[in-house]
Length: 315
Image (cartoon, rainbow, N blue to C red; front, side, top):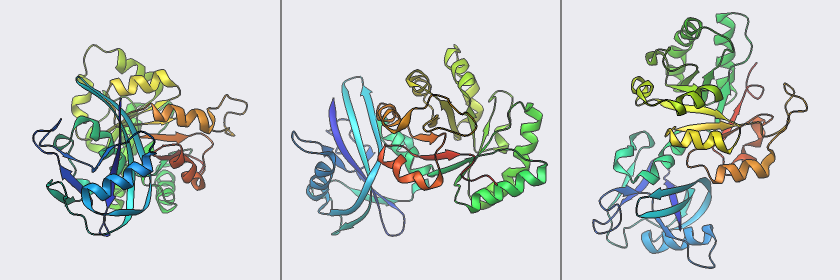
């Protein structure tokens, strides 16, 4: 396993710095996030700072963990330790002759990068806070509470109505989708991807039962209508995380991390177990269950993508 420290370098305008791999290298010709091997005796942050100085001539001054990705190519195994760099000293220059380019986050394309880099792109595009819809009394109340949740900082909405028929879910999605589009907040529908219309949502979320059902299917034809949209799932243990990775999903939520009022006495993961599971997952992982809006730093320290919650955002 080759341990690599990589940097998602964000400029003052929000664009990202990427570099092109030399043609003679592994995965040559593709773009990548700058970085390099962690040497014996080095920590990942030490390697990050050294590599960025050697490759680009810059010194990071503000950086934090983004995602850790174990990835197995047919001929090589890598562990990408990715850090988001929000401030640095110096002017980036390709000191090893590599071309550099600043690009908008939304312009990042999976096809331009090595496969191991693709979860990094998802982590950069996905928000840190996701509201899961709770109880509501009417369609108007549902919309009002979604508006309130976005006002409280939710950057993604997961429409979840337990026991709802597909027609009811579709109607609720049709109500919310125009507002979410205007607010530039993705709307993800928690439901059956084979019975819902992708034109009323930015993605689909599988509960643990649908995740297992899709993992057992002999074909993945269910995915075709959702190409180009987010596909996520709810996970509770290592086996479900592995199923999500085999399916190539974009993200998952992992729960319950902490005790919740809705499930008193239920077994919880706790931060150490959450962090251990996240470390082995090659995709962004939201913390769900008992996690408040003020605990984003704890989630980040554990390697997670962000917070998914009802109570933290729902009116």
